[in-house]
Image (spheres, one colour):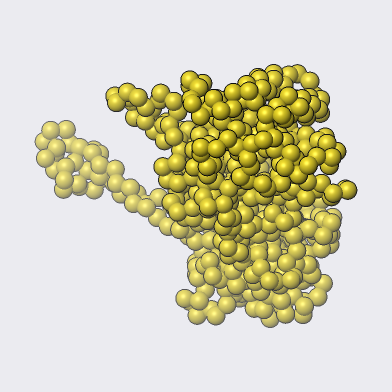
Length: 593
């Protein structure tokens, strides 16, 4: 597709004949406005979220076309690191959610560019590189215009073999209309010849007087379109199809050279050139109207990357959005999905005690059961007393079990062995106490592997899974990630962090503490079996409680939950810090003995 052409609000034209009748169904009229309106439901009125949603949808389309499509990004993002297809956000900017007809246009650009990569268009140019070197400069420009237009036609013919041809067709109409206005009329030129050829491949209207100026070469080019269509449906390999296309272009050039060379050239840009081992023709961003790339600003690009990271494996952009993109301590962070089965031992007595805590300190909702034959007199039902005697009611107060708790566990190398087994038992016990209610319980473990901080979900549906502890301790980034993914539904949120040592990898723990405070998440850190208490106190301040051994973990968590549910936000009850002694008689100097 032409890179320097972008749509306006009314650019996309309806499918041929689709809107002729005035009494069409509303869906058909909407269909004329954009095909993507039928399937694109994940939209937003926020610019960054909408750009991220659209980019995510385009990456799915590109992934459907093949692995050689490469990375797809908006201009202004990190495409310098290897993005293959770069789209200008100015094509669709200005109205959010993006109208379906503009989504169709940008999808057409994407599909065309992606197919050119899956069909190895670059190899066609390389096959013709030696031929270009021996040509005069004007003849080279003429042949390159034929090759460039031929590859555009070929890619659209490939797209027409699937539903994606609907999008390339919408985009092609807009591009042809805008390109027509840039070509001077009244003089026979190579620019107009290739444009008429491209247009006539799909437009079968009667030949106009203007087209009669190109009768000879245009007939050969139309014949080339038919041969390109045969190549596009061929069962031969992609490499063989590239060789066939390059041979067809040279053959057509030899047949039409004597008639084309006398024509004028208005656009004398070299489309492809190659020095020894250096290709100077590189993919450029698909731009909007005016031909100038208006990429995302750095701030917007970062917000878009953070939105994309919500559903991605790499969540480093989320951490950077919290601690700052200039923080040099941040290390790459990723989700870990390769879990192993866990076989924990659950203590039924402790499950019953935890469940009793949840029920005792949960909020209550009043239920009134009316129309009873006994109970408290219902004044609204007194008229039924002489009829059937059902003039009584009963009030019940039911516990609303809707706690929002997240358990974050250190799974570094020092947690191997009995420590990790006890942690698994504790997670399984709390999870079982939560079953059967509307509670939200999350459990994560974090560790380090090959210089990357990993965070793994320990709950897969109704099953508890595990991971092999390894690596260093990146507590700061793990706290941010766990807090970021906690549900935001208005319930009180509690994040319980269990570790056996200080953080020695990634950003400082204080960033995680500050983030939890900003998001009104109650963070409590339990230091179990610690190695250097002074170092942990220096990192966590007064927001940490110590256990002498991991054997005290289950009862300590039970006391912690009870105390948390009673006092809620500690600052409102005379406690200056988000953590407080879990049990006053048992706590001596911040240590639970």
